[in-house]
Image 1 (cartoon, rainbow, N blue to C red):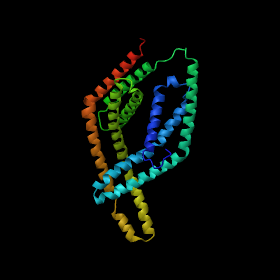
Image 2 (tube, rainbow, N blue to C red):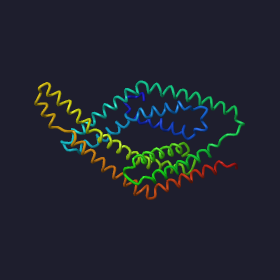
Image 3 (cartoon, helix red, strand yellow):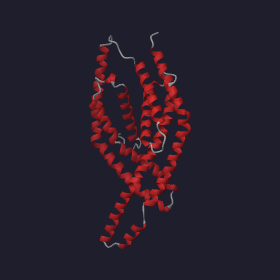
Image 4 (tube, helix red, strand yellow):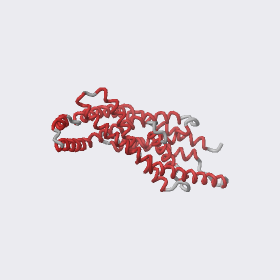
Amino acid sequence: MDDRADREALHDFRVAIRRLRSQLRAYRPQLETAVRAKDRKRLRAIQRATGAGREAEVGLEWLARQHGGLAPEHLAGLNWLSSVMLERRRKCAESLDSELRTSFRRTAQKLEERLALMRSEQNLLSEEPHVSFGRTLANQVEAHATDLLVTLGQVVSVEHTERLHEARIVAKRLRYLVEPIRAYAGEAQLVVKRTKKLQELLGDLNDVHVLMREIDQSFEGSMQQKAVRLRDCLRRADLERARREASVSEWAGLVELYGRLEEERRELLATLRDRWLAGDLDSLVARARDLAHELRVADRPH
């Protein structure tokens, strides 16, 4: 986050926070002496606070890809929406430069200290019965795989955006659980690979839904801004500029952009329906359950 020239810094930071929160959530009982509710709340708050900035970055990237294929009468809408997202990204960057950085560094330092202390205490009590990592991970993998199957199975309509969002989160958590062991368990690499593909598809769908909602809410803001500009022109008796302002509308461009997003959404949903819900999801869940079995077998005393 310290490199302002790194355009992926915010994305990488958010991924790191998600990975950390996912592990803390998965092993909550084992980490209860080191990780407090306040730590979890702070990490969640940081994650949410950076969401608007990342959504703006994704939106700007998508808008940049549309620019070359738009008709001249649609450019006003694209430029207006781009300006809104640029301002939002700027405000988020300012926020990151202040309290969020401080909050994260303070939370990370406290977590490191308490986790180190917990590790030292466990070494001193090494003769005490310990919880098996293999069995714990196996239970988590199986539970997340079942949750993913159930959640995606409930998606029967394009309007079920909340279910799709929930499934994306579960897919991320499953992937983050398995990634650390992919070099040590036979099924792990394949589970990670397939989960990543599903996660990317659901992520693309989420990005489309966010942008569609943004445009849907933009019409009122665009109208209000145009009214302010026209009023200012008239008050200055600048009738020529007022006429130009009145003749240009962002709405045609916003409608065109919305239509393109709707087309992308249909294509993504078709892939989800025809590929994942028609068999690939069942295969992924079966692989995850095989991995859980493999972990339990490896954990048995020899």
